[in-house]
Length: 208
Image (cartoon, rainbow, N blue to C red):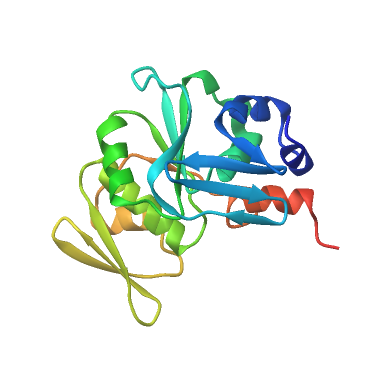
C-alpha cells in the first residue's frame, strides 16, 4: 500500500496489482519508461513524450485477453480503481504511452497486439480523441495523420483522403462515421473530468 494512492482512495486490490511496476522516491511515485519516467506527487504529475512504453500485467502476450492503453500509468490506476471488479486482471495488459503516442509506440502496438481486444483510455478532449484515432489506425495497420488547422478545424488524412472536422465534439466514433470505417476498438471516457485521474483526484480533494 502506498500512502499517496491510499490518500486518493485507490482500492487495496488495485494498489497490490500495480505495486511491482513502480518505485518511490521521497514518497513520490515513479513509473520507469525507458530513459524517461512518469513522476507523480500529490501536488503535481509530470508526463512527457517517450519512445518506450510503460507496461504492467501479464507478460505473455499470447495469453492476454484484453489490452488497455492510456497516456499515463496513474490514469490506468485510476481507471482500475473504478472498473477492476469487472475485469480479469490476470489476463490483461496495461500500457502507458506518455504525453502522446509516438511512431515507435504505435509500431509496437501494431506488431504485438494484433487480434487482441483493445481499450483506449485517453482524455475526453480533442488531443485525446486524436490519440484514440492514431492508435486505432495503427492497430489496424491503416495509419492516420491529424493536423490542427485554423478556426478550430481538424484535418485528418486517412486512406488517401482528407477529412475535415470541428475540433469541438471530435471523437473516434465521429471519424468512423465520416470515413465509413470501423476500427473495432473500444474507447472509455470518465463520467466526470477530462481523465480518470482527474476524476479520482476531484473525489479525494473536493473544492472548498
